[in-house]
Image (tube, rainbow, N blue to C red):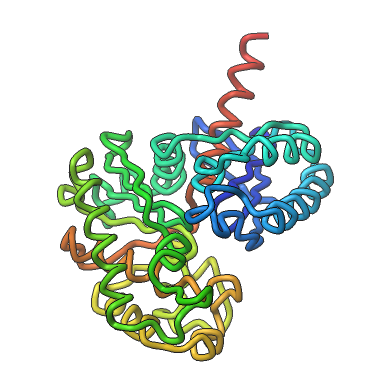
Length: 323
């Protein structure tokens, strides 16, 4: 087992995993797993730049994470940055700030690389189980993009498309700088049309309908699952590998899409940072289930973070073997 740290900095959140990992056996033991909503992608779709206040929030979270990594004595750290920092013209400022705080450069990975990490993290412990047959379609609904990966033991095809809960909210559900409360039918139709076009694009390279098991990742999916399970407080153990039927996803999505900010905020398992963007995220999930004909989604709390951690452990073991 190698003690490693992995950071996934996305459009909406920045997450840390410190774990002991063995990529050969697929064993991974969490020591610390946490998330902060920093909304790094605030306004990027419109301005093309990372906002200073978004950078400040992200760097503050990095300082917190640096202390945790030091406390646990992780041997290696990998910092992966996704959609927002790929798109921003001032991403060099982001890179310099992370390097100063954590001592490593963020790897601004491609959407295809992001998909590979997500698939590894989500499926390593599912492979071979009769009740969750492959091939798998892993969907990671992020803030700025959604990754689609089809595979069975290994990745067969992957594609990243620019629809995520933050991007869809900012593009379609905002009027005069404020999220519409609740969204209008025209706004919801615009989200659905955008997502449908993105699914058309994804299907050009990923056989979405060939998978036998749909695996859903990230905050939009886990929040819908928590609501479906009727949880009073967020419980990752209950959510991990929960099976949420299509009918429940449809009903919850309809409720979220037609509720006010106050009504969504009153849902006990709703993270405050997801209140304004959860409707768009749920719409993306529902559209994927309708396009693929999936009767249920298997929800995974293991995702890109776990895939990154395994990659760090593999590099560490390869390095020690070469010495």
